[in-house]
Amino acid sequence: MDLLSLLLSWNFLVLALAIAAATFVIRNILEAIWQLDEKKIWNDTLLPCMPVLIGVLICLVASSFPFPVGITVLSAKLCFGAVAGLFSSQMFKVIKSLIDKKTL
Image (spheres, rainbow, N blue to C red):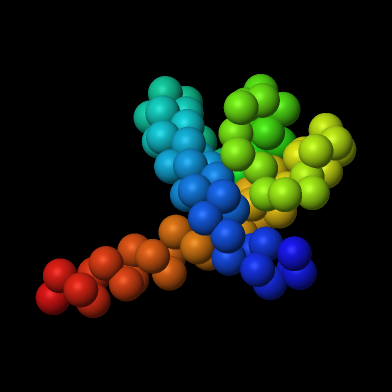
């Protein structure tokens, strides 16, 4: 399996969208509780790192997630989650724009 087909696999898409959803929920809860949206360290450091950390955490905990063929070692699973976290925000924007075009 080459890199492009791995990034376009349903496993990767589902994981990236789950990470985007979890990031959205966690971000809204934390910002509502502590008014973090005006803090520089929150916007510049913690918020961009959150999807990667959530992706790694999901892949660490979800042992029954259907990882693509060849990803069997824990370190590969954690890297898969980190990359899915990196792509999750952009993927969410693309899918949201496609849905918005479809509904207009």
